[in-house]
Length: 462
Ligand code: UD1
Ligand code: CA
Image (cartoon, rainbow, N blue to C red; front, side, top):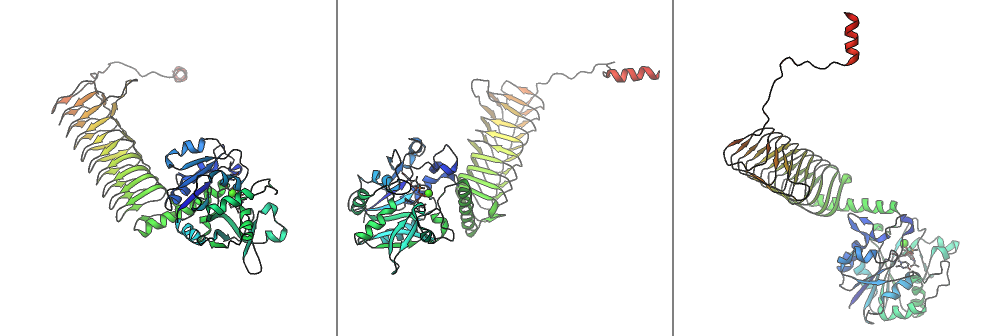
């Protein structure tokens, strides 16, 4: 059996109250459409996406998905949408229809749906909801055979009582589908070509409609509003958190943990509350991430301790490093083993050697820091002259006094000491003391200025 998937995603999503097409809204850091596409890709390489609202905003935003894009303008309904994607699909294929706004459908459930459609049958994914309002209802006969689907807007009061609803997802042979789509009429409440009307046509043609029940509701929940989006986000985060805990990660509070990407963690990793992980993050063994941290595309070695309130992005952190609280590690940073980065320190595009310490209030950018270097409080690499960025090199074992400015391009040799408060504009040779301070002076007989009213008061007394 060869499978073609068509994902319907041309609608606007009016109830999102957003200028962004609905399928571009994000769940766990990924667009809704990406979620569906990734799942479809687990089943087949032949994936088409029907887009429309917003023009080519959707295909441009998701060009990397590598799907077949099919435009549907104007949008005359779900049946009309599927029809646009059908021409290149071979007659013998099974067509599986998915929705761009139903992001959490699983490949396992879809495999069951496909199986239900084999041997000339039609597979229809349904679910029973305590509140079915808004959905198309599954109408069955006295023998419990599916007869048709009725949209809520076209349903009678009795039909609205039906709890079994149409998830929209179905699978059937392509040739059959093509024939039925051509027969669709738009004589209904919404003046649309309803894909759901093919069910009655299948029944007419003696094709068995096999229903598959979704395993859990979240799998088939559509996103129509931001409230629903947030609800699914929490559900998804909960599932991810449980998976990580099952693998041995300690989460202080799974309800206050957000993973928007992929996390790989070694054993005995502890993550405190309110940590956000984005992109691809790898944590070594015994890593401890304190509260309120954001890590994006980071590789963290064993035994690293990230204290609270740090932002670490596109960086490699060697083992035994200690970071924070309140540190910002920017893209292109590499910390070697045992480095300490303290509070209010910003590091950008720099390499920090093993066991070096930058503990307080510093900016280090475009810099190579050697091993066992100590950079005092408030030291700054002046890497930007308003036009270009320049490099600073600090040799092994150097000591940079507090409040120093290193005006790049500049080099400080191995073992050199720069006195506190210096402005270094020329290279410092190894093992010397470099100082650039204005000589301190004392002004004899100088009097502190006095405020006028104090002077007046003083006069009255005398
Ligand atoms: C549809 C089903 C309904 C089902 C529900 C499940 C129909 C007629 N109704 O209703 O039985 O219970 O989904 O969520 O199919 N779309 C297009 N082009 C169009 C119209 C829609 O691509 O011309 C896309 C939308 O972007 C969306 C999907 O199809 O991804 C569903 O469309 P929507 O308007 O949300 O259908 P519902 O009224 O929810
Ligand atoms: Ca919908």
